[in-house]
Length: 280
Ligand code: SF4
Image 1 (cartoon, helix red, strand yellow):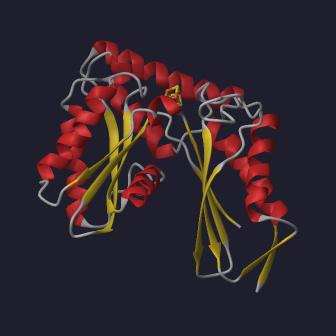
Image 2 (tube, protein in one colour):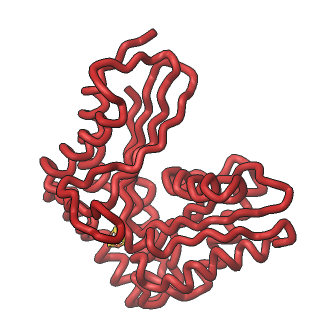
């Protein structure tokens, strides 16, 4: 049994919060740069060039890529041969978020109460998803999520009679209704199957997959491509100003479901779809 002090969890989460906000995944940045060259709309190209300049400035100046530094979503895969010592695991994650956001001068965006509001002042609590896995390592993924895009997300409990076209239409309709609100070009995490809450979680996990990695199942890889094409035919374009670059990638995660249902969720990610991963 390997011992791991929870302070290492806190330190890692604090560091990842800052890094994730300052630097986008390299393949996402590359896709935005490529789109700046291929977009047909002149205004769309200008917007994409501005986004590229913004990313470079954030890196050069050590500043967040966006003013909305998001709610901190943390996925933790904890090896079953790890013995965590020195305190509570979840408290260690929240402390990491607190340190990362306050000392890293990131905007604190968490309302203490969803109806009565009030700011918690340190971006805690984080949203934590923990899974027990084989081995003696802990893998942490920190994915700050902005709400301009989160607010545009949808979940529909379809029936088993729904066709592939129905699912593609639901995804495209979600993006069409969102318009410029999620700061396109977007990244779409699509969850298919499971039950109500697993379906939403699948979509969030899909957003944490690299945008250049297609689903391992050729059927779902092809469906990702069909959805991407359908969305890019909408004409929403960069920041909603029109163009053919509405989405940069569609990532699907799926799971078995009940014979009577076909849940589908779309977690909309903006062009600042961030995450950083570490294994300790
Ligand atoms: S949706 Fe994304 S790019 Fe737009 S303000 Fe929110 S975090 Fe920033």
